[in-house]
Image 1 (spheres, one colour):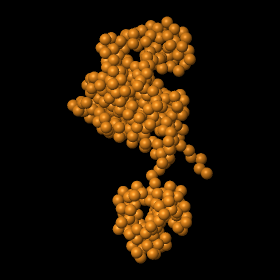
Image 2 (tube, helix red, strand yellow; image 1 turned 45 degrees about the horizontal axis):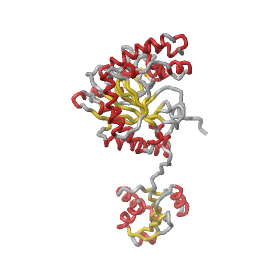
Image 3 (cartoon, rainbow, N blue to C red; image 1 turned 60 degrees about the horizontal axis):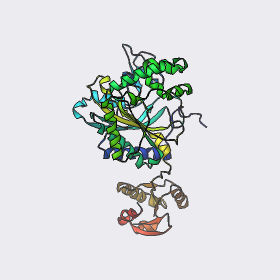
Image 4 (tube, rainbow, N blue to C red; image 1 turned 90 degrees about the vertical axis):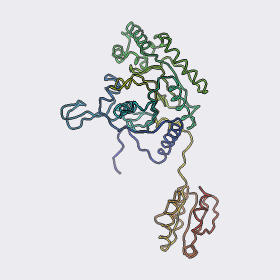
Length: 423
């Protein structure tokens, strides 16, 4: 037996798992298109600078989790005169923003796009978290009004409803305010945590100077006790920020979308503002977030593009697939069974004609009639088309209903029409 195994943190999507995966992506794609989002795809790797600019040089993703390589020279992820540093994408918003800039799409706003594909992060694999994982996401670029936030959240909620997951998730909502409000809150956090720096974890002490909002995400027990007494963002919002958040909440209320305010829900990078949200679940253990997003009005400017507002979210396909409770059955094919050598050519021709007419058809490769029908039952086939000498002479086929066992002789000319009843 071979000792070869998948690389740690990766997994095979075998047919049953792939059906769940496709159910998530296909449902999300169908709903996103109803909202006017168009599909796009970015390369699976980008120049490393794309992610360093957007995720921050000191973020955990950049310093610990990115898969970075050098093309043509250099070492340790650094660029030299002969090579360029590239990184497998750990997320896709940065790639979409880069495409917006490099593709000169500023004249096409509002731009509404969605994507689906694999992402890569070098982190400890666990339930719902892999080193190669898949995301579906939407981005609405160029709309500064709160209606954009409402629309992307509503799109996410409808996707979850289409998957039958409305009761399995909770929408958590917060505001990060505008840059003025954010700066005031940052100063208050730094002052509060500086007074308690002696009991902060090492990671949080480091974050205190470069990214104090990230302390609010800490999982360390001592940090969490401090976080419970930290200042609240809402106490530092100016009038404009309060009005923006009120408009988002009113829009969700008008659409009947339930939410829970979570004042500790934050985004650590400065280009995020106003709405932050997550759809969370208690059914996947520690990995509670299944869809997360927010407004990032400063992102495209940070990357060197024109000042352009944006809002979007990304969802973990594997996590959503794990939440789907019912089995996703495989398609039930029609099985063509030739009996004897003389029927092989006709069976092959009929199989091709049926497939061209849109039927899923399986043609048995070998074995007697009994073995081929056993295989058909194992495949959960819906019907069998049998050819023997008598059928060939009559230019007909025996059509057997594999659910009821009933069968009838059908002319080849009317076979497609008769099989349509089994679709």
